[in-house]
Image 1 (cartoon, rainbow, N blue to C red):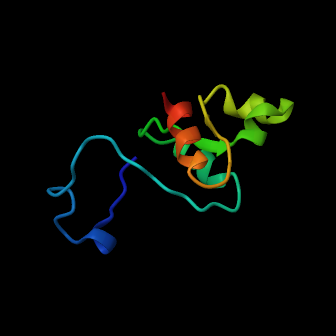
Image 2: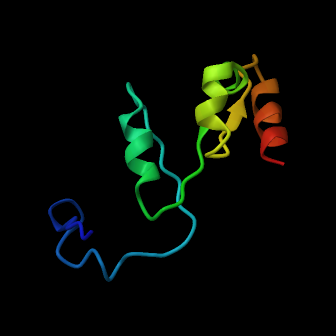
Length: 87
């Protein structure tokens, strides 16, 4: 499926396209963005609140897509907790 981004990125956007690791940050309000990304060729990984990854229904969705649980803790502990989860 071909998408034309020239309206947003200019007529030569394909020439400037770099292949490699990509980060997509989504301030989503529904699960539609996650589902649409799963259907793409990007093979994305997701970060979700740890509470979602630990409850029964949340695990049904988050485990198959290897979601990284994010433990929301105050201050510098946030960064340390995220780094530990990625390791």
